[in-house]
Length: 257
Image (cartoon, rainbow, N blue to C red; front, side):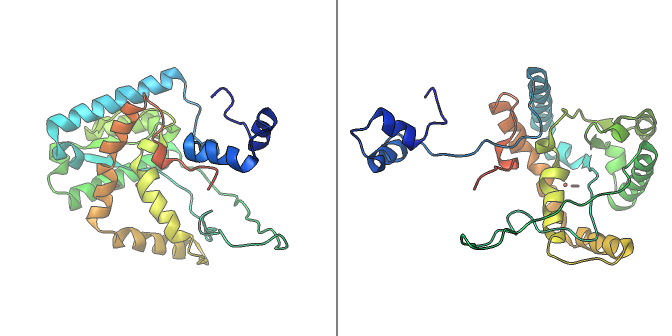
């Protein structure tokens, strides 16, 4: 219990009278230990970060219990992500069988371009408002609840002024929390699986057309699921004292309405 990095070899030096096979059986079958790698997390959360996550989770769940699905129906969320003319297959997709003599396969990282600034983000918000007015009748009257992260373009003064002009409610978002962002854990996850099919796009327009077609091909229920997943995730956040929601994170071993 004091040294979780012990090995069977180390144990056998302490218990030479017991075979390694029996030691392994005792550890795994009787003591029910299994060896896993540490989890990758976006950030080493401080106590302050965890308190912020707990506060936001509690506020969200209180609103949900009072207003129910009417509250969820008012939520609009989104984010930015990089997409390239060619998206390498995911780590899971690139898995293959090999033996000791097989060559090692490698993957390369791609260099990406210009980032989004406040001016471009405000342009997107204006287009978003027009789309809501045309496609979601009554939503602007009911009141939009905007859920976006605290990236610089989202928190800029110009952005705040635009949101005030719209009269939209800005729901608090805890820092370093992609596990609580439907765009990250839902929409972008499925989009990048689609893009990693191996297809290469000749130019930006081909890529935009393909991505737009993919978004349009998803039924409304697909986007609703992303919002509804917030409920169990905020509960898990509460139950873990503000820690990360484990299911969203990848192990180093074996987006919405």
